Length: 140
Image 1 (tube, rainbow, N blue to C red):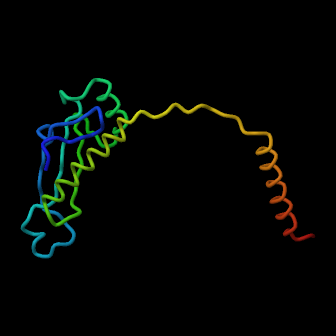
Image 2 (image 1 turned 30 degrees about the vertical axis):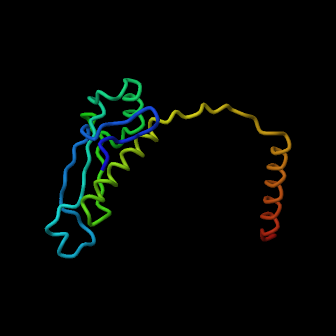
């Protein structure tokens, strides 16, 4: 595994900033599951990382609010594989994907108006649907 985790072109985190915890995993593995700690929980301290700028830190906290605890620590788990090494790699990839998505600057949406033709098409279709439903009614 590399010593650095590439998040995007502007940000690379050293692996030393992550802390790993291993525990026994459920799921497939037979007797192996009872004796090998293959589940990986990775933690990254967003609030105290010296690599992140203040703007990056605020964006991560805002966008990943559901995954960051009260102390500012991002936690991700992986127990997909029977191999601890593979789960460790998967957890690091998930953190990188999460952080890259959260740090991506979204384009500002410019509000547009519908065209007159699309508006009239919509109203025409509504009228046709209404007439169709009206034709299904029982005449009393």
